[in-house]
Length: 469
Image (cartoon, rainbow, N blue to C red; front, side, top):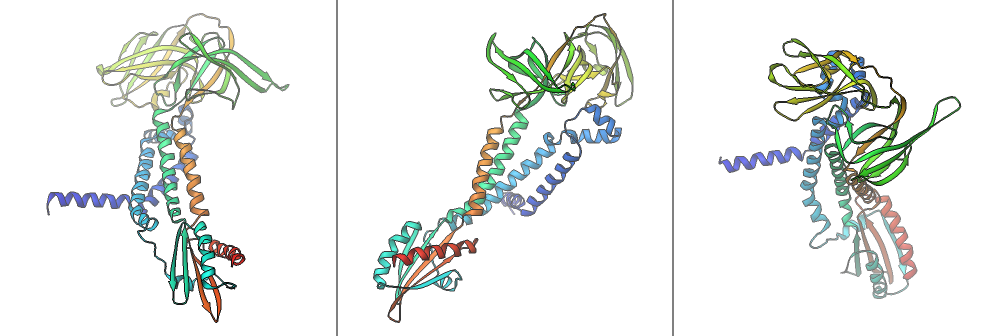
């Protein structure tokens, strides 16, 4: 066997693999089961909550498998890609035969099938065979796009059909699924979902994302001009409202008061009112010094190093440099406010800088971060400062460029389902013949998918036709 034939056989086997309906079932069951897991285990919660809920072994396993953010995990995306390829190959595999049915070179009509059809209506017409044919032909041609007249042994056969193209409805559904998956993937890969706290009168131009991912730098600043809180008599919050300004090149480009469920939208970015709270007038708290404890995961060796803010710390094994950038009273993290946390940056020798946080009150917090070292910070010495308390607004900032693609997918889904379930291929035959000196008219129809619907159509058309003949 030649190399070319081996390649052709492999390609054929691969094509048959993706064209398999069994593969579709396996993928859909896998997605369903993993979605159940994603429902049972809350997604994108605080790592501290996960660590309290699960044992250390389970936590490490789930964290390695990205169970805590499974809808953005590599394996969930892989299943979606497999489903997309499976749908495309199955559609192409069956489209050639469907295409021949929809666009035949010469439509064929089997009179015996019509004569045996249960959907039949018969009556006697007043005019002659020729007269009935002349009246019926233009009437039928207006209602059915494929129309033909044939002579029979004692009269005429008028055939008509329409809606062959409705077999394409299922392909519109397939396309809608592909578009919705593509929209979700685009949003997952190129969008973001982050949080930021802004004190009154201050502005920011970056937000923190989930899962210790790098900050998102915005091409404008978000300024909180004012924050207003309304309480019920019981003291519970009734409404909290933020007056926001978006600033670019020192120019205000848009202003809006936002409340819950009434976001500010700009250039595909959505800014939601998420939370509020009281913080010191400055988020940055003066810190004198502290101790950084570095535990090497492989060997278990522990290194204690005295450090200060913005002072580089060499990591063991010359693997990189750790910089404790800042200490803040509150940092938005996974939708909650992480109290008393250090902002850190790991400058690796090979690769991009890694940004993460270390809470001062949770020494084991960094266990969940992937890497060769576990880092904790303790023995923190603060400078004497008496902060003034003020409000901050907590904002959720999102961007999902895949939403328009998903909307188009929903549109195709509606169209495809309507065509598939409410429209169908219709074949009609009107037989005009002489029977015992009278003109007999028989109307019969065939539909492969909706026989009750075809029967109703035959009855309705027959009533209309009887009035003409």
